[in-house]
Image 1 (cartoon, rainbow over the protein chains, first blue to last red):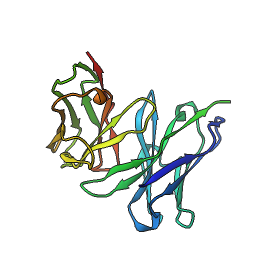
Image 2 (cartoon, each protein chain N blue to C red):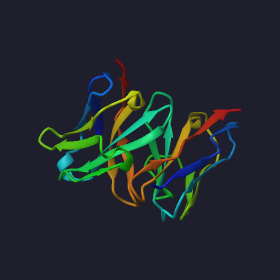
Image 3 (cartoon, rainbow over the protein chains, first blue to last red):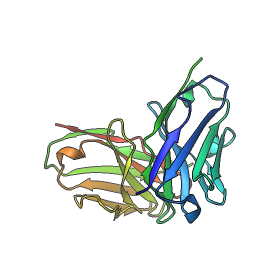
Length: 120
Length: 106
């Protein structure tokens, strides 16, 4: 069974960088598929942030591309998210997930989500 | 950007009812449309991918149809555990989610 677990600070100050890591178990990232970050806030609903594969090829949501970085560490079987220059609008539950690239693509496994608040 | 619009935003239904939720894309997305169910405090769970393929383990009371710009999620007979919020998601270009449809008990 594939399991994903988000980890990182629950509180970030405005203008600073939000950093989260997703630990994957039950599946080797090096084996394939894609790995993604999605967030959910009351104001914006579910919002895709960015996706990476085991080779480090990345895809980003265009409106957020300038502030978002997704990276992968296959040796540790984990991938990470950084969002720069955060504001209160970045307050959300952040999910990491696995993406299957078939019939378009879809998420078949999600982490439980972690709430990140942006406040001074 | 491809926008996806769900309707209705909420509905009230009874156990045993047939429920239909629609999703419209702002341009053709072929069959690159997925449906998820989310319960409070939990991550979304995949129900249907590729517009009409049922994810393994999902009850056959769920079905999806459509192609191009118009898609439908149908629950043939609503069960108590089906009261939740449902989201469509396009994966033709990046990923965009609909705003959700909350299915409540009548």
